[in-house]
Length: 477
Image (cartoon, rainbow, N blue to C red; front, side):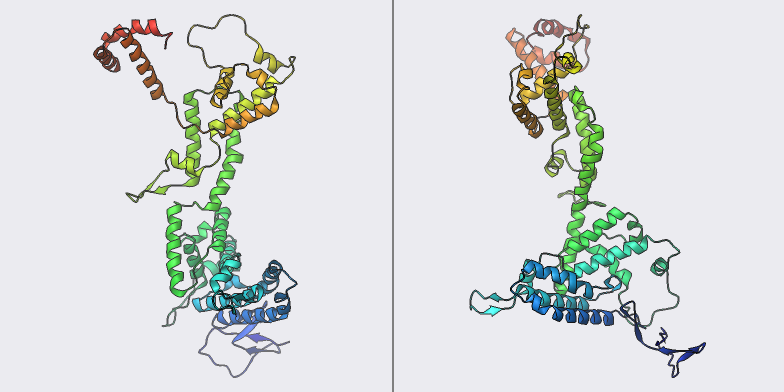
Protein backbone atom coordinates (compact mmCIF):
# COMPACT_ATOMS: atom_id res chain seq x y z
CA UNK A 1 0.00 0.00 0.00
CA UNK A 2 1.37 3.40 -1.01
CA UNK A 3 1.49 5.91 1.81
CA UNK A 4 1.51 9.56 0.80
CA UNK A 5 1.47 12.93 2.46
CA UNK A 6 1.12 16.49 1.23
CA UNK A 7 2.50 19.75 2.60
CA UNK A 8 1.01 23.21 2.24
CA UNK A 9 4.46 24.83 2.60
CA UNK A 10 5.70 25.14 -0.97
CA UNK A 11 9.08 26.63 0.04
CA UNK A 12 10.30 23.40 1.63
CA UNK A 13 11.75 20.84 -0.79
CA UNK A 14 12.31 17.35 0.56
CA UNK A 15 14.60 14.94 -1.28
CA UNK A 16 13.74 11.98 0.93
CA UNK A 17 10.52 10.46 2.12
CA UNK A 18 9.35 10.63 5.74
CA UNK A 19 9.68 7.41 7.72
CA UNK A 20 7.56 6.76 10.79
CA UNK A 21 7.65 3.47 12.60
CA UNK A 22 9.04 1.56 9.66
CA UNK A 23 6.55 3.09 7.24
CA UNK A 24 7.68 5.35 4.41
CA UNK A 25 5.49 8.31 3.38
CA UNK A 26 6.01 9.82 -0.07
CA UNK A 27 5.47 13.55 -0.49
CA UNK A 28 3.14 14.42 -3.40
CA UNK A 29 1.50 17.53 -4.79
CA UNK A 30 -1.93 15.92 -5.21
CA UNK A 31 -3.73 12.70 -4.37
CA UNK A 32 -7.16 11.11 -4.44
CA UNK A 33 -9.39 11.21 -1.39
CA UNK A 34 -12.91 9.73 -1.48
CA UNK A 35 -12.85 9.94 -5.28
CA UNK A 36 -11.92 13.65 -5.38
CA UNK A 37 -8.57 15.17 -6.31
CA UNK A 38 -6.97 17.22 -3.52
CA UNK A 39 -3.96 19.47 -4.32
CA UNK A 40 -1.46 21.14 -2.05
CA UNK A 41 -2.59 24.58 -3.20
CA UNK A 42 -6.32 23.76 -2.77
CA UNK A 43 -7.01 24.29 -6.48
CA UNK A 44 -10.30 22.84 -7.74
CA UNK A 45 -9.45 23.29 -11.42
CA UNK A 46 -7.69 19.93 -11.47
CA UNK A 47 -10.73 18.22 -9.96
CA UNK A 48 -13.17 19.91 -12.39
CA UNK A 49 -10.97 18.91 -15.34
CA UNK A 50 -10.88 15.32 -14.07
CA UNK A 51 -14.67 15.28 -13.59
CA UNK A 52 -15.25 16.52 -17.16
CA UNK A 53 -12.92 13.81 -18.48
CA UNK A 54 -14.81 11.18 -16.49
CA UNK A 55 -18.10 12.53 -17.82
CA UNK A 56 -16.74 12.40 -21.38
CA UNK A 57 -15.74 8.76 -20.92
CA UNK A 58 -19.22 8.01 -19.59
CA UNK A 59 -20.75 9.90 -22.52
CA UNK A 60 -18.86 7.81 -25.09
CA UNK A 61 -19.95 4.64 -23.32
CA UNK A 62 -23.62 5.48 -23.96
CA UNK A 63 -23.15 7.39 -27.22
CA UNK A 64 -24.91 4.74 -29.27
CA UNK A 65 -27.95 4.97 -27.02
CA UNK A 66 -28.06 8.76 -27.27
CA UNK A 67 -27.89 8.68 -31.08
CA UNK A 68 -30.31 5.78 -31.48
CA UNK A 69 -33.58 6.45 -33.26
CA UNK A 70 -35.32 3.72 -31.27
CA UNK A 71 -35.26 5.72 -28.05
CA UNK A 72 -37.34 8.83 -27.43
CA UNK A 73 -35.70 12.14 -26.61
CA UNK A 74 -37.25 12.11 -23.13
CA UNK A 75 -35.59 8.76 -22.41
CA UNK A 76 -32.25 10.06 -23.70
CA UNK A 77 -32.51 13.12 -21.46
CA UNK A 78 -33.23 10.80 -18.54
CA UNK A 79 -30.07 8.79 -19.36
CA UNK A 80 -28.10 12.03 -19.35
CA UNK A 81 -29.51 13.07 -15.96
CA UNK A 82 -29.12 9.70 -14.24
CA UNK A 83 -25.90 8.31 -15.79
CA UNK A 84 -23.69 11.14 -17.07
CA UNK A 85 -24.58 14.16 -14.92
CA UNK A 86 -23.95 12.50 -11.51
CA UNK A 87 -20.44 11.53 -12.67
CA UNK A 88 -19.64 15.14 -13.64
CA UNK A 89 -21.17 16.74 -10.55
CA UNK A 90 -19.66 14.39 -7.96
CA UNK A 91 -18.36 16.54 -5.10
CA UNK A 92 -19.39 19.80 -6.81
CA UNK A 93 -20.67 21.18 -3.47
CA UNK A 94 -17.08 22.15 -2.59
CA UNK A 95 -16.08 23.67 -5.93
CA UNK A 96 -15.16 27.34 -6.38
CA UNK A 97 -16.04 28.04 -9.99
CA UNK A 98 -14.57 30.74 -12.18
CA UNK A 99 -16.16 31.97 -15.40
CA UNK A 100 -13.74 29.86 -17.45
CA UNK A 101 -14.66 26.66 -15.61
CA UNK A 102 -18.36 27.47 -15.91
CA UNK A 103 -17.87 27.85 -19.65
CA UNK A 104 -16.11 24.46 -19.88
CA UNK A 105 -18.97 22.78 -18.05
CA UNK A 106 -21.54 24.39 -20.33
CA UNK A 107 -19.59 23.29 -23.41
CA UNK A 108 -19.67 19.70 -22.16
CA UNK A 109 -23.42 19.90 -21.45
CA UNK A 110 -24.17 21.37 -24.91
CA UNK A 111 -22.08 18.63 -26.49
CA UNK A 112 -24.24 15.93 -24.91
CA UNK A 113 -27.50 17.75 -25.67
CA UNK A 114 -26.58 18.16 -29.35
CA UNK A 115 -26.10 14.41 -29.54
CA UNK A 116 -29.50 13.87 -27.89
CA UNK A 117 -31.58 16.32 -29.96
CA UNK A 118 -29.71 15.76 -33.23
CA UNK A 119 -29.23 18.16 -36.10
CA UNK A 120 -31.64 20.62 -37.68
CA UNK A 121 -32.28 21.45 -41.33
CA UNK A 122 -31.57 25.08 -42.13
CA UNK A 123 -34.63 26.91 -43.46
CA UNK A 124 -32.62 29.04 -45.94
CA UNK A 125 -29.94 26.70 -47.28
CA UNK A 126 -31.72 23.40 -46.68
CA UNK A 127 -28.57 21.86 -45.17
CA UNK A 128 -28.29 20.05 -41.87
CA UNK A 129 -26.56 21.99 -39.13
CA UNK A 130 -25.89 21.79 -35.37
CA UNK A 131 -28.37 23.32 -32.98
CA UNK A 132 -27.47 26.74 -31.61
CA UNK A 133 -27.19 27.28 -27.86
CA UNK A 134 -30.47 29.22 -27.72
CA UNK A 135 -32.25 26.37 -29.52
CA UNK A 136 -30.79 23.85 -27.06
CA UNK A 137 -32.02 25.93 -24.11
CA UNK A 138 -35.50 26.04 -25.64
CA UNK A 139 -35.58 22.24 -26.08
CA UNK A 140 -33.99 21.37 -22.72
CA UNK A 141 -36.41 22.67 -20.13
CA UNK A 142 -34.52 21.40 -17.05
CA UNK A 143 -32.19 23.66 -15.04
CA UNK A 144 -28.75 24.44 -16.44
CA UNK A 145 -25.70 22.49 -15.15
CA UNK A 146 -24.35 25.65 -13.48
CA UNK A 147 -27.69 26.22 -11.77
CA UNK A 148 -27.48 22.63 -10.51
CA UNK A 149 -24.05 23.29 -9.03
CA UNK A 150 -25.08 26.57 -7.39
CA UNK A 151 -28.18 25.01 -5.90
CA UNK A 152 -26.05 22.19 -4.44
CA UNK A 153 -23.62 24.82 -3.15
CA UNK A 154 -26.40 26.49 -1.17
CA UNK A 155 -27.90 23.22 0.06
CA UNK A 156 -24.53 22.02 1.42
CA UNK A 157 -23.73 25.45 2.87
CA UNK A 158 -27.01 25.47 4.80
CA UNK A 159 -26.33 21.96 6.08
CA UNK A 160 -22.85 22.91 7.33
CA UNK A 161 -24.08 26.17 8.88
CA UNK A 162 -26.65 24.25 10.93
CA UNK A 163 -24.07 21.80 12.33
CA UNK A 164 -22.98 21.91 15.94
CA UNK A 165 -19.91 23.96 16.83
CA UNK A 166 -17.90 20.83 17.64
CA UNK A 167 -18.12 19.47 14.06
CA UNK A 168 -14.99 19.91 11.96
CA UNK A 169 -16.89 21.13 8.90
CA UNK A 170 -18.48 23.95 10.92
CA UNK A 171 -15.14 24.88 12.48
CA UNK A 172 -13.55 25.12 9.02
CA UNK A 173 -16.47 27.28 7.83
CA UNK A 174 -16.36 29.88 10.61
CA UNK A 175 -12.64 29.63 11.46
CA UNK A 176 -10.00 32.13 10.37
CA UNK A 177 -6.48 31.15 9.26
CA UNK A 178 -3.50 32.74 10.91
CA UNK A 179 -0.86 34.61 8.94
CA UNK A 180 -1.03 36.77 5.82
CA UNK A 181 -1.99 36.10 2.24
CA UNK A 182 0.72 36.17 -0.44
CA UNK A 183 1.15 39.37 -2.48
CA UNK A 184 -0.97 38.26 -5.44
CA UNK A 185 -4.61 38.55 -6.40
CA UNK A 186 -6.55 36.30 -3.99
CA UNK A 187 -8.48 33.46 -5.52
CA UNK A 188 -12.22 33.31 -5.08
CA UNK A 189 -13.08 31.46 -1.91
CA UNK A 190 -15.89 28.97 -1.45
CA UNK A 191 -17.75 31.30 0.92
CA UNK A 192 -17.42 34.07 -1.64
CA UNK A 193 -19.27 31.83 -4.12
CA UNK A 194 -22.05 31.27 -1.58
CA UNK A 195 -22.55 35.02 -1.11
CA UNK A 196 -22.51 35.54 -4.88
CA UNK A 197 -25.14 32.81 -5.37
CA UNK A 198 -27.35 34.46 -2.74
CA UNK A 199 -27.02 37.84 -4.44
CA UNK A 200 -28.27 36.26 -7.65
CA UNK A 201 -31.54 35.35 -5.95
CA UNK A 202 -31.94 38.74 -4.26
CA UNK A 203 -30.37 38.30 -0.80
CA UNK A 204 -27.77 41.01 -0.13
CA UNK A 205 -27.18 40.60 3.60
CA UNK A 206 -23.75 39.19 4.49
CA UNK A 207 -24.94 37.27 7.54
CA UNK A 208 -26.09 34.22 5.58
CA UNK A 209 -25.26 31.77 8.39
CA UNK A 210 -28.11 33.10 10.53
CA UNK A 211 -30.40 33.00 7.49
CA UNK A 212 -29.67 29.29 6.96
CA UNK A 213 -31.03 28.44 10.44
CA UNK A 214 -34.54 28.90 9.01
CA UNK A 215 -34.84 25.72 6.93
CA UNK A 216 -37.97 26.71 4.99
CA UNK A 217 -36.58 30.10 4.04
CA UNK A 218 -33.21 28.63 3.06
CA UNK A 219 -34.86 25.92 0.94
CA UNK A 220 -36.76 28.63 -0.91
CA UNK A 221 -33.45 30.28 -1.85
CA UNK A 222 -32.05 26.88 -2.89
CA UNK A 223 -35.02 26.35 -5.23
CA UNK A 224 -34.71 29.90 -6.56
CA UNK A 225 -31.01 29.28 -7.35
CA UNK A 226 -31.98 26.12 -9.22
CA UNK A 227 -34.72 27.75 -11.32
CA UNK A 228 -32.93 31.01 -12.12
CA UNK A 229 -32.12 31.46 -15.81
CA UNK A 230 -29.08 33.58 -16.63
CA UNK A 231 -27.90 34.81 -20.02
CA UNK A 232 -24.66 33.06 -20.95
CA UNK A 233 -22.05 35.63 -21.84
CA UNK A 234 -19.29 37.11 -19.75
CA UNK A 235 -20.78 40.58 -19.83
CA UNK A 236 -24.35 39.35 -20.12
CA UNK A 237 -24.03 37.31 -16.95
CA UNK A 238 -23.20 40.34 -14.82
CA UNK A 239 -25.87 42.55 -16.42
CA UNK A 240 -28.55 39.87 -16.07
CA UNK A 241 -27.68 39.20 -12.46
CA UNK A 242 -27.98 42.88 -11.60
CA UNK A 243 -31.35 43.14 -13.37
CA UNK A 244 -32.67 40.02 -11.69
CA UNK A 245 -31.56 41.18 -8.25
CA UNK A 246 -33.34 44.50 -8.77
CA UNK A 247 -36.48 42.73 -9.94
CA UNK A 248 -36.43 40.46 -6.90
CA UNK A 249 -36.05 43.43 -4.56
CA UNK A 250 -38.98 45.18 -6.24
CA UNK A 251 -41.17 42.10 -5.81
CA UNK A 252 -40.48 41.63 -2.13
CA UNK A 253 -39.49 43.35 1.06
CA UNK A 254 -37.63 41.14 3.46
CA UNK A 255 -38.75 37.77 2.17
CA UNK A 256 -41.49 37.25 -0.40
CA UNK A 257 -40.82 34.86 -3.25
CA UNK A 258 -43.37 33.34 -5.54
CA UNK A 259 -43.02 29.84 -4.14
CA UNK A 260 -43.13 31.16 -0.58
CA UNK A 261 -46.27 33.21 -1.35
CA UNK A 262 -48.02 30.07 -2.58
CA UNK A 263 -46.93 28.17 0.51
CA UNK A 264 -48.07 30.96 2.84
CA UNK A 265 -51.43 31.22 1.06
CA UNK A 266 -51.89 27.48 1.50
CA UNK A 267 -51.05 27.83 5.20
CA UNK A 268 -53.58 30.67 5.53
CA UNK A 269 -56.33 28.60 3.90
CA UNK A 270 -55.62 25.38 5.79
CA UNK A 271 -54.51 26.64 9.21
CA UNK A 272 -55.79 30.16 9.92
CA UNK A 273 -59.06 30.35 7.98
CA UNK A 274 -60.68 27.20 9.46
CA UNK A 275 -60.06 28.59 12.96
CA UNK A 276 -61.76 31.89 12.08
CA UNK A 277 -64.72 30.32 10.24
CA UNK A 278 -65.47 27.57 12.75
CA UNK A 279 -69.26 27.53 13.27
CA UNK A 280 -69.83 30.42 10.85
CA UNK A 281 -72.90 28.62 9.42
CA UNK A 282 -74.95 29.93 12.35
CA UNK A 283 -73.65 33.50 12.38
CA UNK A 284 -75.76 36.59 11.69
CA UNK A 285 -73.01 39.17 11.14
CA UNK A 286 -73.78 42.86 10.79
CA UNK A 287 -72.00 45.22 8.43
CA UNK A 288 -69.58 46.17 11.19
CA UNK A 289 -68.70 42.52 11.85
CA UNK A 290 -68.25 41.85 8.14
CA UNK A 291 -65.91 44.82 8.00
CA UNK A 292 -63.88 43.45 10.92
CA UNK A 293 -63.55 40.09 9.19
CA UNK A 294 -62.34 41.78 5.99
CA UNK A 295 -59.83 43.82 7.97
CA UNK A 296 -58.44 40.63 9.50
CA UNK A 297 -58.15 38.93 6.11
CA UNK A 298 -56.44 41.95 4.55
CA UNK A 299 -54.00 42.05 7.47
CA UNK A 300 -52.95 38.45 6.81
CA UNK A 301 -52.74 38.96 3.03
CA UNK A 302 -50.54 42.06 3.45
CA UNK A 303 -48.17 39.94 5.52
CA UNK A 304 -48.10 37.27 2.81
CA UNK A 305 -47.69 39.49 -0.27
CA UNK A 306 -45.41 42.03 1.41
CA UNK A 307 -45.00 45.69 0.59
CA UNK A 308 -44.81 47.49 -2.75
CA UNK A 309 -42.51 50.25 -3.92
CA UNK A 310 -44.40 53.40 -4.87
CA UNK A 311 -43.78 54.40 -8.48
CA UNK A 312 -43.86 58.13 -7.70
CA UNK A 313 -42.03 58.48 -4.38
CA UNK A 314 -39.95 55.30 -4.57
CA UNK A 315 -40.81 54.43 -0.95
CA UNK A 316 -42.19 51.14 0.29
CA UNK A 317 -45.88 51.15 1.19
CA UNK A 318 -48.62 48.73 2.13
CA UNK A 319 -50.75 47.18 -0.60
CA UNK A 320 -54.16 48.77 -1.12
CA UNK A 321 -57.30 46.66 -0.82
CA UNK A 322 -57.85 46.62 -4.58
CA UNK A 323 -54.27 45.43 -5.11
CA UNK A 324 -54.78 42.66 -2.56
CA UNK A 325 -57.98 41.55 -4.32
CA UNK A 326 -56.10 41.45 -7.63
CA UNK A 327 -53.32 39.28 -6.14
CA UNK A 328 -55.60 37.03 -4.07
CA UNK A 329 -57.66 35.14 -6.62
CA UNK A 330 -59.55 33.01 -4.08
CA UNK A 331 -62.94 33.84 -2.66
CA UNK A 332 -63.52 36.61 -0.15
CA UNK A 333 -63.99 35.57 3.49
CA UNK A 334 -67.55 37.00 3.53
CA UNK A 335 -68.44 35.06 0.40
CA UNK A 336 -67.22 31.87 2.07
CA UNK A 337 -69.39 32.57 5.12
CA UNK A 338 -72.48 33.18 2.99
CA UNK A 339 -71.86 30.07 0.93
CA UNK A 340 -71.45 27.91 4.04
CA UNK A 341 -74.58 29.47 5.55
CA UNK A 342 -76.65 28.57 2.46
CA UNK A 343 -75.23 25.04 2.42
CA UNK A 344 -76.17 24.53 6.06
CA UNK A 345 -79.62 26.11 5.54
CA UNK A 346 -80.36 23.66 2.73
CA UNK A 347 -79.23 20.77 4.90
CA UNK A 348 -81.52 21.81 7.74
CA UNK A 349 -84.47 22.47 5.41
CA UNK A 350 -84.21 18.88 4.08
CA UNK A 351 -84.25 17.32 7.57
CA UNK A 352 -87.22 15.34 8.85
CA UNK A 353 -89.84 17.20 10.86
CA UNK A 354 -88.86 15.37 14.05
CA UNK A 355 -85.33 16.80 14.06
CA UNK A 356 -84.74 19.63 16.53
CA UNK A 357 -82.85 21.78 14.05
CA UNK A 358 -85.78 21.70 11.60
CA UNK A 359 -88.28 22.46 14.39
CA UNK A 360 -86.22 25.49 15.42
CA UNK A 361 -86.10 26.65 11.79
CA UNK A 362 -89.83 26.52 11.04
CA UNK A 363 -91.13 27.13 14.55
CA UNK A 364 -92.38 30.47 15.90
CA UNK A 365 -91.64 31.41 19.52
CA UNK A 366 -94.56 32.47 21.70
CA UNK A 367 -94.91 35.89 23.26
CA UNK A 368 -93.92 39.35 22.09
CA UNK A 369 -90.60 40.84 21.15
CA UNK A 370 -89.10 43.45 23.47
CA UNK A 371 -89.45 47.10 22.57
CA UNK A 372 -86.74 48.37 20.27
CA UNK A 373 -85.36 47.66 16.89
CA UNK A 374 -85.28 43.86 16.33
CA UNK A 375 -81.94 42.29 15.53
CA UNK A 376 -81.39 40.62 12.20
CA UNK A 377 -82.44 36.99 12.33
CA UNK A 378 -80.53 34.07 10.82
CA UNK A 379 -83.34 33.31 8.37
CA UNK A 380 -83.30 36.93 7.21
CA UNK A 381 -79.66 36.51 6.34
CA UNK A 382 -80.53 33.46 4.25
CA UNK A 383 -83.16 35.41 2.31
CA UNK A 384 -80.74 38.30 1.88
CA UNK A 385 -78.07 35.96 0.53
CA UNK A 386 -80.55 34.45 -1.92
CA UNK A 387 -81.59 37.91 -3.14
CA UNK A 388 -77.94 38.63 -3.91
CA UNK A 389 -77.82 35.67 -6.30
CA UNK A 390 -81.15 36.49 -7.95
CA UNK A 391 -83.77 34.51 -5.98
CA UNK A 392 -86.58 36.76 -4.65
CA UNK A 393 -89.23 34.19 -3.67
CA UNK A 394 -89.74 33.84 0.07
CA UNK A 395 -90.44 30.09 -0.05
CA UNK A 396 -86.79 29.14 0.05
CA UNK A 397 -87.44 25.97 2.10
CA UNK A 398 -89.26 24.44 -0.88
CA UNK A 399 -86.39 25.50 -3.14
CA UNK A 400 -83.91 23.72 -0.87
CA UNK A 401 -85.60 20.36 -1.51
CA UNK A 402 -84.08 20.37 -5.01
CA UNK A 403 -80.43 19.58 -4.21
CA UNK A 404 -79.00 20.43 -7.65
CA UNK A 405 -80.76 23.79 -7.87
CA UNK A 406 -79.79 24.66 -4.28
CA UNK A 407 -76.14 23.76 -4.94
CA UNK A 408 -76.17 26.10 -7.91
CA UNK A 409 -77.23 28.95 -5.61
CA UNK A 410 -74.54 27.93 -3.09
CA UNK A 411 -71.85 28.09 -5.80
CA UNK A 412 -73.24 31.40 -7.03
CA UNK A 413 -73.02 32.84 -3.51
CA UNK A 414 -69.38 31.71 -3.31
CA UNK A 415 -68.36 33.17 -6.68
CA UNK A 416 -70.24 36.46 -6.39
CA UNK A 417 -67.99 39.51 -6.06
CA UNK A 418 -69.38 42.48 -4.11
CA UNK A 419 -68.39 45.67 -5.87
CA UNK A 420 -70.16 48.07 -3.55
CA UNK A 421 -69.20 48.03 0.14
CA UNK A 422 -72.01 49.37 2.35
CA UNK A 423 -70.65 51.41 5.23
CA UNK A 424 -72.20 53.43 8.00
CA UNK A 425 -71.51 56.59 6.01
CA UNK A 426 -73.43 55.20 3.04
CA UNK A 427 -76.38 54.36 5.25
CA UNK A 428 -76.41 57.88 6.70
CA UNK A 429 -76.23 59.34 3.19
CA UNK A 430 -79.22 57.27 2.03
CA UNK A 431 -81.20 58.27 5.16
CA UNK A 432 -80.50 61.97 4.62
CA UNK A 433 -81.45 61.88 0.95
CA UNK A 434 -84.74 60.07 1.70
CA UNK A 435 -85.53 62.46 4.55
CA UNK A 436 -84.80 65.49 2.37
CA UNK A 437 -87.06 64.25 -0.45
CA UNK A 438 -89.86 63.58 2.03
CA UNK A 439 -89.67 67.03 3.59
CA UNK A 440 -89.55 68.77 0.23
CA UNK A 441 -92.72 66.94 -0.76
CA UNK A 442 -94.30 68.22 2.48
CA UNK A 443 -93.44 71.83 1.56
CA UNK A 444 -90.30 72.34 3.69
CA UNK A 445 -87.83 74.57 1.87
CA UNK A 446 -84.36 73.38 0.98
CA UNK A 447 -82.66 76.15 3.00
CA UNK A 448 -84.51 75.00 6.11
CA UNK A 449 -83.30 71.44 5.41
CA UNK A 450 -79.70 72.64 5.17
CA UNK A 451 -80.06 74.75 8.32
CA UNK A 452 -81.50 71.81 10.25
CA UNK A 453 -78.73 69.47 9.10
CA UNK A 454 -76.04 71.98 10.06
CA UNK A 455 -77.57 72.51 13.49
CA UNK A 456 -77.93 68.78 14.04
CA UNK A 457 -74.33 68.14 12.95
CA UNK A 458 -73.01 70.60 15.57
CA UNK A 459 -75.27 69.26 18.33
CA UNK A 460 -77.52 72.31 18.63
CA UNK A 461 -80.56 72.09 20.95
CA UNK A 462 -82.61 74.05 18.43
CA UNK A 463 -82.69 71.14 16.00
CA UNK A 464 -85.66 69.51 17.73
CA UNK A 465 -87.94 70.76 14.92
CA UNK A 466 -86.79 67.85 12.74
CA UNK A 467 -88.05 65.23 15.16
CA UNK A 468 -91.77 65.55 14.44
CA UNK A 469 -91.60 65.11 10.61
CA UNK A 470 -89.25 62.18 11.16
CA UNK A 471 -91.77 60.47 13.50
CA UNK A 472 -94.51 61.01 10.95
CA UNK A 473 -92.51 59.68 8.02
CA UNK A 474 -90.51 56.86 9.60
CA UNK A 475 -92.87 54.27 8.06
CA UNK A 476 -92.14 55.68 4.60
CA UNK A 477 -88.39 55.50 5.16
